[in-house]
Every structure is written in structure tokens, then in C-alpha cells.
View: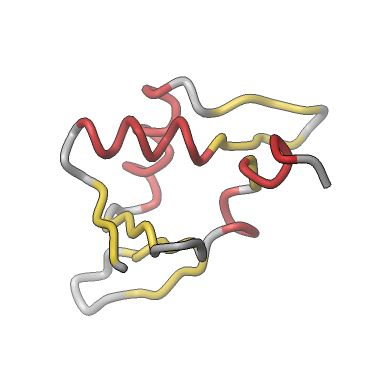
Length: 82
């Protein structure tokens, strides 16, 4: 698997989800630190589209997490845990 493939994951396959009491879903991905998106699924997809991180390969829509994370960080929506 090349580096570009590693950075680009299917949204539901690449992120661990847990549902909070306020019914928001917490998306996390493993790495040197955890990147946490505390957004509802619709808002997360909307932010991904707005950032230009969503693209399609065949019938599968993929999200470039690096692009999405930069976008969320610029809007103050990304939390990094070390």
C-alpha cells in the first residue's frame, strides 16, 4: 500500500466511531495522536465536501483525511490528543 493510499480511507472503514449521550458521533483515527471530530455524520460529510476532500473512485466515495483535517483545524473543529 503506497503512502497516498494510506492517507485516503473510506470514511466508515477508516474511522472508529462511538456515540455520545448528546447523540453526536465521535470519529477518531489512529496515528501518532488521535484526531477527533465531534460532529454529527451529516456535518462531517458537509465539511469534507466543503474542504474538497471527497472524491469518487468508481462507485466508492473516498475522503482524503489529511485535507479534511487541515480544513477542520482551520475552523477550530479538530481536537488532537497525544
